[in-house]
Amino acid sequence: MPSHDGLPKFELAFPGPLRDQLVAAVLSGAKISTSGLVVDYEHCGDELPLVGSRSVVIDSALRPVAIVEVTDVRVVPLAEIDLAHAVDEGEGYESVAQWRAGHEYFWHSPQMREALDDPEFAVGDDTEVVAERFRVVELLDGADGTADPAR
Image (cartoon, rainbow, N blue to C red; front, side, top):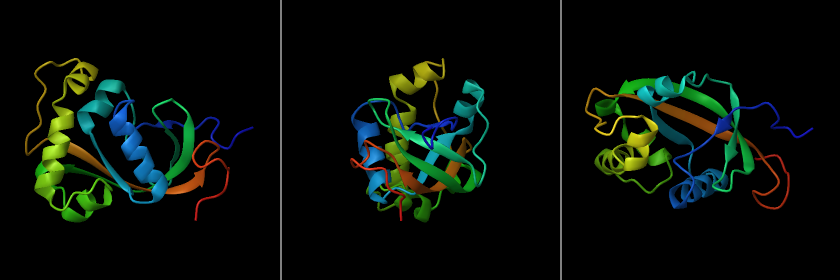
């Protein structure tokens, strides 16, 4: 039985180039934080992540590639995201302003608005963000051709 059986999915963005970039950053160790919207969790009926919980990272081909463990979760207003969180997202952000611009672009995208069933959805300073930190605990077959425990 694979080690990821029964674990919830850890899906970054939507399948496609952005997810591929984000998954590669997770696998390389560059990405150790991520951001989601409380409204998205509520809309999907999902519980917020809990420290110590594990999930399986899914790539754009919907293959499991790694298991991650949550190390910290904060729910903060968008305006309170700090530089450490932005940098640890592993996307090359050098400022909170860059991070916010990139995330607003995604959160205001047609795909996200469709996923939320709200064609006018927009974030603001008070929008609640789930700032999650995690660590890779296992790489799975397909991540690098082996099934080795992560460092």
